[in-house]
Structures are given as C-alpha cells and as structure tokens.
Length: 151
Ligand SMILES: [Zn+2]
Image: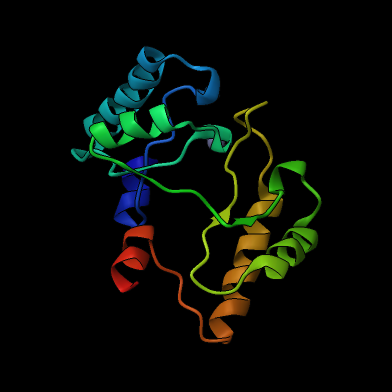
C-alpha cells in the first residue's frame, strides 16, 4: 500500500510504529517508535520518511528534538475534519469548508485508533467532494513538501 501511495505521487510520513500517545512516552520509547516506522517504510520503499505527524497531535519539546535528530520535520494540521466521529460525508465537507482558507493541511483518517479496519467510506466521499469543489475554485492540491517550497 505504501509503495502504491508513493507511486501515485503522495508523500509518506512517519506516524510512529504502533500509534502511542507520545506525551506519555519515554524518550527511548519515542525514539524506538520513530525508528521502527522509519525502518518499515525504508524496507518497502527504499526511502526514509522526512515528515512526521505525532499520533493525536501529542508532542512535547523533547519529542520534537528526537524527531529532528532523526532527520524529520514535524507536520501538524490546521483543518480538523472530525471524520473519526463518522458524522456523514456532507457534515465532514461542511466542517472542513468552515476552516479552509488556502495552504491548509486537513486532518483525515484511514483506519482509527479503536479499530484499524474502521469504515472510512464517508471520508472517501468527503475527500472527493472537497477536491472537486476546491479545484473548481482554482485551488490546487499538493504535497506538504510542495507547500513548503512555495512559501
Ligand atoms: Zn493517527
């Protein structure tokens, strides 16, 4: 799946190996989580992620120091879709639209912290609608590294 994502032009980041809350993780646990994820992605793609998003957004200065020491930059989001509450595609779209201004990073999910096989069909539909709507308005959808280069 990761190989297919990268082949399709997406950028794959590190999100830890087992999705713990890093605010309550020790430095050793945090480093191990990041390194295991790096190794797993490296094994299947030949590349190590350069971006990192902390599970639940949980991080402390010590977390970010470890992230950077491993050659990654943390990336957060500014638009929260609340898709994990499965409110329906239309509500996900409206929730995102209220927050979007341009140059946004939208938080959406594939799987869930409760069940990895969670039904994300609402997220898929909402994503298609958002992309269609914003493209019509002249927005472009780009990867995080592309946004950084353009700023
Ligand atoms: Zn997550």
